Length: 342
Image (cartoon, rainbow, N blue to C red; front, side):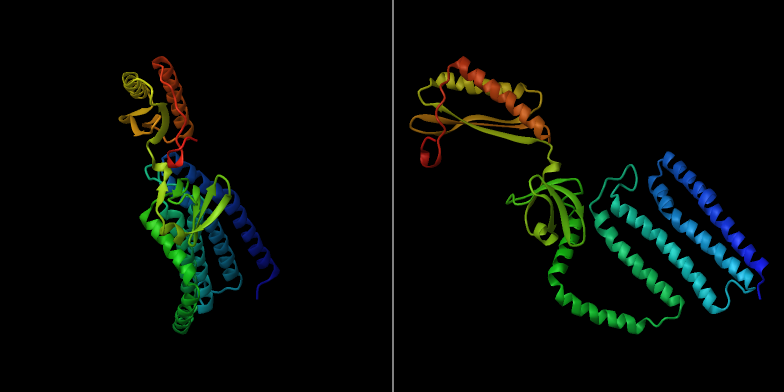
């Protein structure tokens, strides 16, 4: 039987072990993480940083187990129950480290390295991986204790079939989310819009059932994944240029030569602007009415920024007004529905 002096020694060893893991081992791991980051090994640095707690807790658990085994003068791997307990601890902390890494990348969907790009698959499948890790850890620990898994797995299978019929709509959203992830039409941070313009905003998060979108007028909206899968989507963040289109109405009494010269000058001014696309510029009369012509002005701005696009559009409109004044082009009232003036 252990005496008080042995108990005090065990407590002292555990206290020293706790101080070592908290002040020395923790600093060693932090230093290694800093070295890996300095060498641009961001993935390995992140993995080591997230494994830090699991490593330190495993070290402390090993100190406690070894101390108790020494106190009671028993072997570390006997009897079988002690062996199963020790192996369960090893499995638990190993899986915990992996789970912490997956949890970090779920909360921080960053590239695995500097050369990688953020992928929409990461936050989506990492949530599935976290669940699988927990289930795998549970079954692994259960097998160490010789737990009979056959009946348990059979029960889970039958229950799963019953549940699947009850949550068909939810499963549709889940498979819709998998389809979104595999097609990769957008990533977190992208600005998207549906064809019917009912949903437009920035992607904040993608999970198993829905996608979180930050809209300009409604705040945060949770959109079911099946809804997004079954509708055409515009990824507005991927645009390299923006279209500007303007309709002007000029009087039919204007001289044809002056009108042609004015349209040609407008075309030239659009072409000379530093931020316009040079290949596609349309400045033409496209409709004729009894008292007026409709002038189509269409061009593209080489940017995806709304403010820059509006600034270029403003420059062109001011230039058009000046050209019309110089060429003495008379404007007409806009034509509304059924060919009537507004």
